[in-house]
Image 1 (cartoon, rainbow, N blue to C red):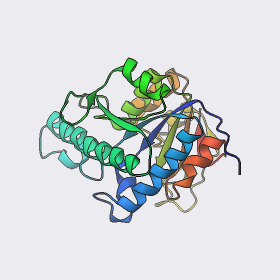
Image 2 (tube, helix red, strand yellow):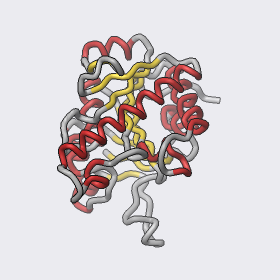
Image 3 (cartoon, rainbow, N blue to C red):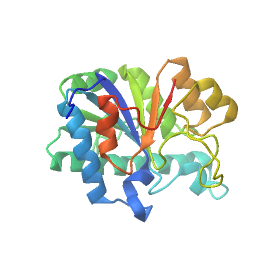
Image 4 (cartoon, helix red, strand yellow):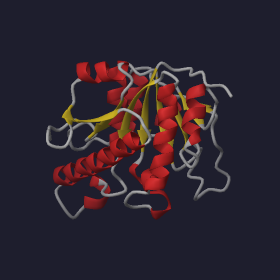
Length: 238
């Protein structure tokens, strides 16, 4: 088995919904244990891993609060949801024998460390998995944008986007049976056709910083290891 990684440092983005498994809300701890074990294997291969997690399994600011509460407050609740997920992931990482820490974009020192690029760099070089919570720390931005921003800040070579779908399609495959999955697609086409890889802000930021994005399915957590080894799963956006 090939245990050689093609990356030195990556940013892994996990959706909150993916952590809920088939329940679609809350946390599926057996699944999380599989995910964390796969990420640990990548770290054991020498890959430095930053991780951004969404909060959709608990609360999605714009969607869940839309029309019912002020947008900034709804987004603040979404940031808190990402902190809950990050703390749960950190605990499970420790259970599988990995070293991990949580850094938040909003100061809450009783729960996690405040984000510092220099400290994150030190932790990554020391082999810790650094989990970034609270997205960008500002309302009106998604955790996708937070992931791209953190990838640029820490000098990641790629963004690994683990989702509930197995790549980027020409249309929503749940609605269009003729939708075709791309093996590779450019940022320009993603933006022009609004293919829904990430939100437009995140996609533009990735393009401006020449950050390749590998989109693949988290249904099998071993896919994380396969992608780190260089297998061409899902879709490459570059």
